[in-house]
Image 1 (cartoon, rainbow, N blue to C red):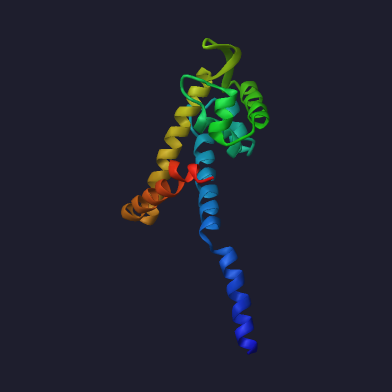
Image 2: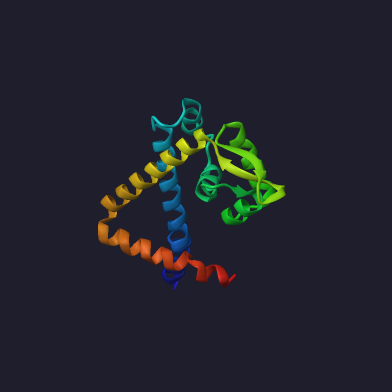
Length: 169
C-alpha cells in the first residue's frame, strides 16, 4: 500500500512537469532566445539595438510588436488586438520602440483621430534580421528533430492554434 501511494505522488509530479503546455512554453522560450541571439549578432541591426538585444533589454514583447505590426502600418488598437495585448501595454511598448527608432507614429490618412504606427528604416532592418533569424532557427529545429517530425509538429500547431480555436473562446 505504501509503494502505491508513493507511485501516485511521483506520477502527480510528473504530469505537472511534462505536459504539452509546459513543453510548448519551454520550446517557445528556447526558440525566442535563439532568435534574440541571432538578431543581436546580425550585422544589419544597428549597433545600439544589437547591444540592447545582447544585454537582454529586448524581450518577447518587442518581438510581439515585430510579429504583428503590418508593413503598411497599424493603428495602436489593431496592433494591440493582433498581439493579444492591452492598448496601454502596447502603447508603452510602442513608446519604447519609438525611442529606439524602430517605429514612428504618423497621422492615419483614413482617420484623422488615429495615429498609424509604422516601421522606420531602422525598424525595417530589424524586421529583416528577425526574418533571417526565424528562418535559421526553424532550419536548426528541422535538423535537430528531422524534417518529417518538424512538418508534423508545424501542421499540428497550425490546427491547434488556428482560427477555429479563436472562435471557441
